[in-house]
Amino acid sequence: MILTSFFIIIVSSLISVAFYTIVERKILGYIQTRKGPNKVGFMGIFQPFSDAIKLFSKSLVFTENMNSFFSSLSPAMSLIISIIMWPLIPFSFNGVIDSNFSILGFFIISSLSVYAILLIGWSANSK
Image (cartoon, rainbow, N blue to C red; front, side, top):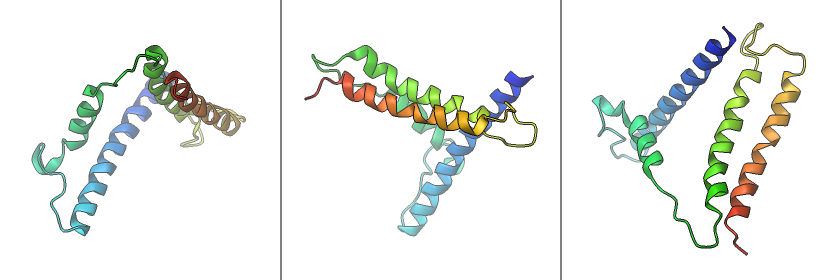
């Protein structure tokens, strides 16, 4: 039961963020007197999904000195850390993880996201 509610919260929040970005792009298009994203689907409704496919299909350019394992691992690590924080946010009185220390856990896990950024900088072997 807890796992399904966690999954529902994650999926609905990711889809809502996708549609918030399309609303933002349409509003900015109207402000700048140009057409917004309207190429994919009916009135651009599938544009966020098209952007996600384009983002995942891009590839990294690896140099000789670069550690490819850690440079591929760090974006996934950042995404996993941000998804782990979602059940700690109290959406109602009976949250997904109802604990007295959920706010403290939220701050601890959010401080770990810095290490993903440090890991990608370290894996580049750039001086």
